[in-house]
Every structure is written in C-alpha cells, then in structure tokens.
Image (cartoon, one colour):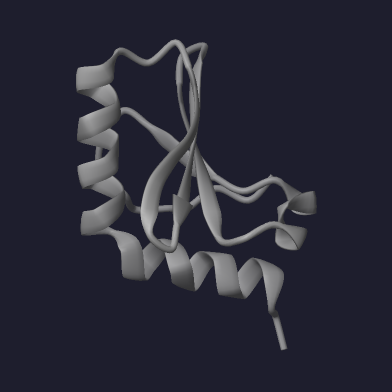
Length: 80
C-alpha cells in the first residue's frame, strides 16, 4: 500500500496495490476515518466518518498537491 510522501497535514494519502484497474484516485486516512477521491476531476467518491468541513479541507489539500499525487500514481501504476 504505497503512501504519498511530503504532503503536510495529519493525513496519510495512499493507493492500494490493486487500485490501478480503477480511474485515478487517492485514499486519505486520519485515525479511523477514511475517504476516497477521484482525481479527474477531483471529486469525493466515498467518505467514512470525516465531517463535511474536513472533507472540504482534504479536497483543497488534494487540489494543492495534485501534480505530486498524479506523479505518485503514475510511478505506482505505470512504472515503465
């Protein structure tokens, strides 16, 4: 389960190894809360326990780091 490094904040952003068969997305976790965002366009796919206000902050974090997240996805899913 590759994590995306150097993104500030209390969140862990990651992909599952089997995620490469889906459209580009990222999972975000803090404590026992978890959500999933599609990246093209940035849109909430699933939310487990994050309050709406925090989901909006996560969306902004993803949008601010979109290039880094897409690069990590490509390195993981398209290593050629």
